[in-house]
Image (cartoon, rainbow, N blue to C red):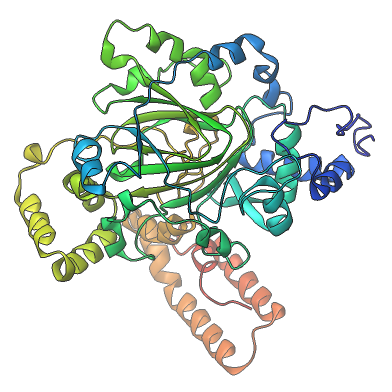
Length: 500
């Protein structure tokens, strides 16, 4: 088939390479792959333009990583040096003593055996609840987050459109599902009941902050080969675990004291600041570094394995195949001091709520927060914050493979202010007003107050109609344009809760 807009040939399963991980013998998948490609391409193209508005269609494949056989051979040859333990052989106390407290990464086996999410499916699509066949059948019509636009609003795709893209994508660094609200939405909440955190990580101190106050901490992760997370440190000094249910992930980890300029070089990389570009350009140099601390710990995670990433460790993650995973960030007791300092600094409301709960449920930890507050800044230790801005990662919702999906700022336009910033804008304008603007403001303030009073009376007396809102908007817009210096701009009213 051809695209009706451009008359260009559209890829079909007969002329495009279908990823071998896809269960092509599954009836649901056969039906999906047989549908005309134009509708899928249109929706994928819209999502791409929202997330990366400066990229052209050619930019997505400019580096030709999908057809680079030398790179593929280089990635397959990377050694797997990750230490491994088994949940059936190592107790929780031993894990805390040998891995959590020393802050050492480790691969854990046996943590997912009892999950309903289950194992990867076969070619007929039979498998656990998170196999590609079951995901398509159960959640094909549900939307999942694949990124954010320049205003930090989530970009969503129906799963069936994304799965079709995943099966045939030849992009250098494909779109990646990193969804932090999957367990809260009615259509996908069952996914949150298909797994349980490994018992090593049951003691997460952030639970005391409450679900509303704590930052996003769990993600459903789905992506094809070459997708992944650019090198970063997880936010707030949190640790993380990542359980893989299908495919293989390639990990590089470096200790917290390695300088940022070593792991995130400033020259622009061939292929952009993406995970696959980091592995192609940066990893070979680090692997040959003279300083042993600059040589990454590399490991290949396979289905059924869980990777533990201690707080502060740099990590870059690349999907070698189609992967399905779940990941959570947490605050273990061994990291409480460093996490608490960051929470107080960047999330004061959350820290207040957390302190109140700790005073009741964990008095010793609450006492520790009081002691930390009394320490001079130089004794509290430095903050090594995440250096990878997330895409998906605004301060409230991140995404990397061990917690936040990292997508660099440099590849995006300067973000517009968020809704919260916009609401605060008038106040900041008032603080910086000139005397002339203040005089104009004083002159029109009574008229604005009268208009506001009339609006409230109108709203309380009758249902709000489009005509009423249009009239109010027109009056205020005329007043705004007549007095360009006053600080109560039209924008300051647009966020009042006069909903229809």
